[in-house]
Image 1 (cartoon, helix red, strand yellow):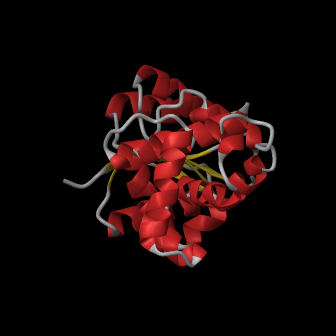
Image 2 (cartoon, helix red, strand yellow; image 1 turned 90 degrees about the horizontal axis):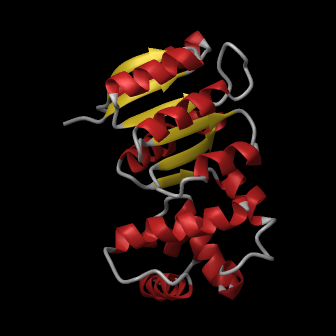
Amino acid sequence: MSARVVIAEDLHLLREGLVHLLRAHGFEVVAAVESGPELLKALTGERPDVAVVDVRLPPTFTDEGLQAALAARRAIPGLPILVLSQHVEQLYARELLADGSGAIGYLLKDRVFNTEQFVDAVRRVAAGGTAMDPEVIAKLLASTARHEPLAALTPREREVLELMAEGRSNAAISQRLFLSESAVGKHTASIFTKLDLAPSDDDNRRVLAVLAYLNAVRS
């Protein structure tokens, strides 16, 4: 069964482009709206597998989209939300991360033009994972030095965790950092230990590790 998607974007051409793109990759677009009130109604009514949401929507053009998505997520705990933004805005990223339950993403709109990267992000969020834009992570990372338990991580472990937050697999991390997959696995295991994550499914622990990282940098 294809993932059901709600799209919220006020620019007609971009909204229609997102609809076409996602349908071409096997998603079922159940609603495509242009305002905050329409988004909240669509999310609570359709209960999609994932929502792709522009931060700034009518009528206020401030954070209407984000607030509608957060309101829906309060009504439907764990509702997967992928936020699109024109610029990195740390306050919005922090609000999105506040409940610490995963199934979240924050991408700059430029990433939409990289079809493979964007579609992969939508799929990961729909599956309960995370998809954080590298530029968002870089800005948040600048404020992490004073936070525990992240201070216990080595520089290499922080690099691995940062790439995990982008949603990269161990294989992708090994290629990016020129490490063997076994070395990445050892770093990942050390991260789990230092973040005091109890043994469980590795995919679940990856999400928990990323959330611990992101929740630390939002404080």
